[in-house]
Image (cartoon, rainbow, N blue to C red; front, side):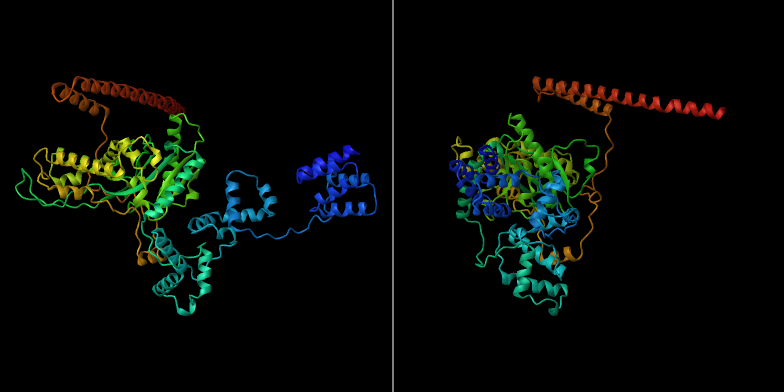
Amino acid sequence: MENLLERVLTGLAQNVPESREKAIQALPVRGAALCLVRALADRESIERLIVYRVDRQSSVELAVECIAMTMFSKPKPSSSKGEKRKHVTLTLNQKLEIIKRLEKGENRNVLMNEFNIGSSTIYDIKKQKDELMKFASQSVTTEKLASRKTLKKPKLEQLDSVLFKWFSAVRSEGKPVTGPMIVEKAKKFGQDLGVAESECNYSDGWLRNFKFRHGIRRLDVTGETLSANQNSAEKYKDEFEKIVADNDLTPEQIYNADETGLLWRCLPTSTLAGGGEKAAKGFKKNKDRLTVLLCANASGNHRVTPFVIGKSAKPRAFKNVTHLPVQYDAQSNAWITAALFKDWFFHHFVPEVKESFKSLGLPEDTKAILLLDNCKAHPPVDELVSGNIVATLLPPNVTSLIQPMDQGVIQNFKCFYRRSFIQGLLNADCDVTDFQKKFTVKDAVYAIAQSWNQVKNTTLQKCWRKLWPAANPASDLTLQTDEEENHQDALTKVLDVVRSTDNPLKNLPEDEVEEWLLIDENEPVEQELTDEDIINIVVNPQPTQNLEENDSDAETEEKEKISWAEAAESLNKFISFAEASTSYSASEIIDFHIIRNKFYTKRQKSRKQKDILLFNNKQITVPNQDFLKESLLG
């Protein structure tokens, strides 16, 4: 009997562990059965059965047998096979969870049982995937996703879309938005869209429904301007250090990325005449722009390949170029967008970080955090997750104070770029105007890669001192001193290049050169929308532009592909020139010979591959031709 009770108690221990000890202590008296009754209070059928037996002075043995029969016997089949399942309405959060688990390969039957839904519901959720993901990404908060159950569209869909796009743009800039502000803006947009007053009354109920549809929390009613302030920055520093401590992170595991606009072939606007010029020529302020994303870790030992966004998907200057030193993509206005950023994160950032960890001997699943500002083009951080590699956001309006890339790194990079650009101008055998036309986006991306590599590791380390002083405690210089020294050093080097020989820029004053170095410091990287722009985007969505047609290098002449023989001739000429010149050392000339030997090796390999391809083609085509001839001749 005690063995049977022991089995019952063992089975109960999984749900009510404390009942086991109490019941064993009560053996073999009636209290054991009573204890079991209390342990099974949530099982009404068992409780009624046991109470019935015990109340009628039945033996402890009989009570235990009843429990054993209920626990260990197989359940009886339902008498009504066609019993209707109770209707369940899932929340948006539950639907999103089902989508994620399906994408991970989880069995749909498990999900159907867990959420008490049918296969048709699973099908409907999969069909709604894009709409659900879009709504979740646009929601200001995830709290409403836990209670909202439908994606019912508003009566005035255009007005709703325009108003929410405006709301998102304003909040991304850190500005407060109150309920009355939303109502007034909705009335203005309604007038612009031709919405009659009878169609919308802009009442409290309308405002409540708008907020609920888009998952907007209680709005900031203080009306205070959210500007950069040191208190918010200091508060986040404490939060950031807690994130580092809780996850046991090292400087190698923490990255920061930031975008900057680059006027890639802009020259000073001065009209001064330089030596050798008969008359003064104006320097055109060229506004051709690229967006450049720079990213590195806090230790300074890993700088991610620059991500460059241009206007043309396939610039003519890239023709016959197999490898670029940057990651390149295109957008009609060279803006960074959420789609481009996500593509960069998953297909470039994550693989490069994993490769860096591998080179350091770290495990494959090592954690990494990417720190981002509140740029409107950055997707929600919950969409930027790849295993243990995740993103986190800085608070609004503190990026200029503590974001690492804004603490001299981008400025330093641009100074190197300007120096490279000026050096190219001085070495060109043409005037300023012709140089601007001939300087292509290919030249720009190579200069970008070179300039990024010239930024010192110590600069990448010290830029974290305002946010995370403990990252590189060995440094004894203040960040402000570093910024000033970097800027002054870059200015001095550019001036040295400009004034080294007679050229159109030789007489430029120092303050004008300095102004030119910082000319695109505040160049936007994302589209800034007016009310009219917002309405036009919603009402008249434009089809995707053919970016291949939009080539900013249209003036560049197309060049034929250079043959191996032509390249060999040019390389031999250069080496002969270097050997006869006093400007190159013996070790440099040896390096040139090594490069030529590598060139010949690759040329020979290319010839072998071509011969194999020709041989295979002959093997396939010649017998077929002979067979046809024999067949025709009979």
